[in-house]
Length: 212
Image 1: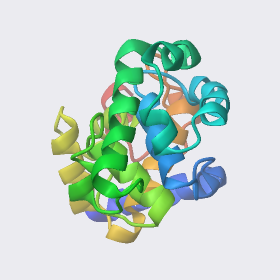
Image 2: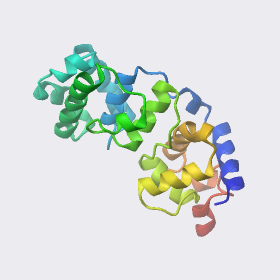
Image 3: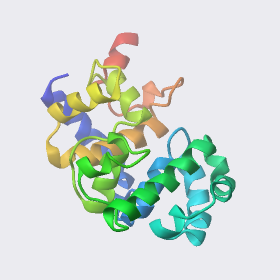
């Protein structure tokens, strides 16, 4: 897809999803954003939202979570799925924050990627929503799928899709692009049952043009 068409898609989605500008984790404290994003893998925001309150009520800081018993954390986050691995990762991440970063979440991509359980997706989300920094595009399952369907990217891996998105869109739009595509993926371009007839970008979408 050329940049002009990509920009038209972006502006159409931007107009259609005003709530993307007020993402519910925007401005969240960095530690909360980090832990919530690690927990969000392979689950829904609703599941994460339901456990974040109880988790931070008991373990509000990296110091307290680093000292938590893994069994206790597993019980709290159970509904997010993969809770054995996630509990271990958020405890290890907290321990590293205490040990290496003075109990603070770092605000650079390089340092974030050293933390257990943190890949580029998580790092990009934390940087954008907690620090206002745009170092790349966070590619979650929605962004990966929609990028291929819409025609933003021909790559099948997150790293390749991110490179294509960074090349297509100006830097000041990278963070919001993720939120817009997630909104569209949840409401219209739903996996296995996309609502193409009512899609606001159907005339610009590669998938729609291929099937109609």
